[in-house]
Length: 369
Image 1 (cartoon, rainbow, N blue to C red):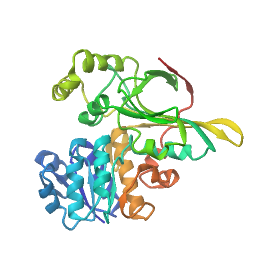
Image 2: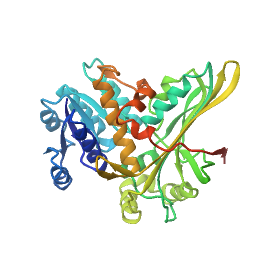
Image 3: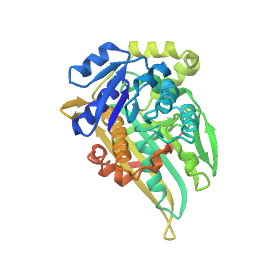
């Protein structure tokens, strides 16, 4: 299967290495950054310099490929998906942006090829887990989805390091968030809904961020009383971000905020990804709760040191590409993350990166502010 991978950043590099290692995929990486491409060329991964913001140039470059994986920032998702449809290739991406996903769904209508956005960690794997737990109940009351990509050793006031796309981070802190309350789909504000909890003896906070639910609000509409997604951080992070975004009005100057964070907040490869999903409802006449928890740490994959967010994000999209190739997923049209069977994902060679993670031993009750 011949794959065009657009985006030679850290996640794109990880995807390319994972797919190449199998020997089952022929991968060519597209980007306009010559330096980023040179890092892959040094590992004998074929590259091609292409302007990813030019839909026509992408369409021409995609001739002869079977599928495209988009590892570019969210604001290029619609452009790249449009080029994929014009070129007649299957499309997979990692976007967390709600509006981009709606646009891609429209692009996928009546297409003979598959369009599957949101193939990362959150949205992505977290939705697969939540949907699997939701199906275990005869009456579903509540689903809580919590994900954190955190530094293992926080040292600054934000208690945070840059571990993934800064554009995506800012976007999820600024955009409205979907949720279900009292059985009705609602929009809630980012950075609100603050709660505190403890896992494995470590204190965390969580708050609303955009995009993590994917299409789950629609899938579970009329089936659940309460559904929400929140990002997990160390205590105090949310208050400082609200100060920057609201009091200093940086939410209206995203470029300035991005420059500030890049200048002041270092990146780290020593991170941990926390996955925490609970579902509560009736089963066999009893009120019960099911919990899925994981902690994934940075480690070597394919002989290369990778951060936890690289492992979980790249691993997820590679697993879903595998499942698509094997006929587990639909061959055409718009594909939701919750159409992926959880056990098939975890049994996959890439999905086992999640299954091999450490389960969390102790969960102390969530307390909302």
